[in-house]
Length: 402
Image (tube, rainbow, N blue to C red; front, side, top):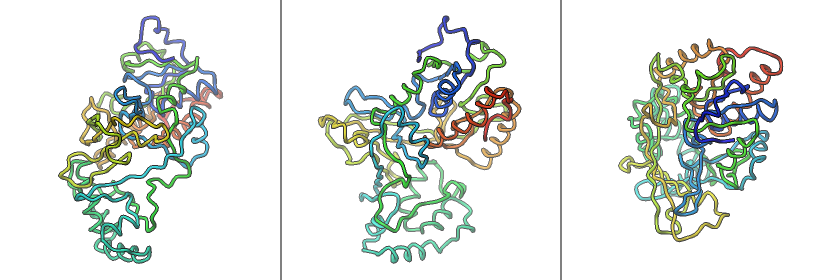
């Protein structure tokens, strides 16, 4: 059951066996597992006015097109267990994600592949010839000698491709010169020496045929699950029984009232526009590599579900902008400077001292999760910590599996 606010008749909070703070993929997976497999009564507390976290989607009233409110969310994984789990809530389409990028007025496919290389250099290379070319260009710097993001990228793909497709996009994404960003932000830049233009290589890929909003609604649709929207966990917490286990998926620094300082995140802003055309850009996501273009990419959601045959009179697009997150913003990507890593480690040690509180999700563990990773981490926390606690009386300590 999902309710918009915490009302007087809902104040019987002592009756719940488990409290989950946050109704994203991690939190709702925990709640669903606890309710369906253990028969627990679960209270889910969500500060926003909707469930689903950043994967929330809605049907845009002006166009009838399903829009991903926080940017395009593309589901992919290699886990048959996770794939079957989500397909239990809605079938998935056979959507395959392809990304294009615009550089100096010309469109290229991403990730960098043989077609990208041939188009960029204006030649028809064989796979072996392209490999030899990139090997000669990336010899300028070795991976081991790279001290920053720029040097690491050049060591992986060479300077020409870096300058065209990575430098400007990265500078916009992080609002920082790539020479001032740590090298480990880019652990791997894929370069394919084939004409494979798929963005993901995972075994399973697709989009929920009935929408992400349907997945979340059905995950929460259980008589033992009670979801409170527009509710601050910290305002409700004093009313909870002292011994009730809590799974906290909010920002870990917020949990401790920022006593050691605030962790740094990147956030995204979206500029929504209804365009009077049946097709604005011919693809779901178009990146913009040039630094002088202020946005990083444009999403056109109609292309995520071509099987739906949306009307052709108008379309909805989102222009995406990146910036540092303030405390009131929705955090997306951990910045993960050395200072942030040290600070998170200090918060992790505090979390390990908490009794009956487990930390999870992107915000609770200060890491970026794809959707399948959030579900997998929730499965792990449930199996390793929650199920043994409720079935074998094992204590809940050490803060979680992070």
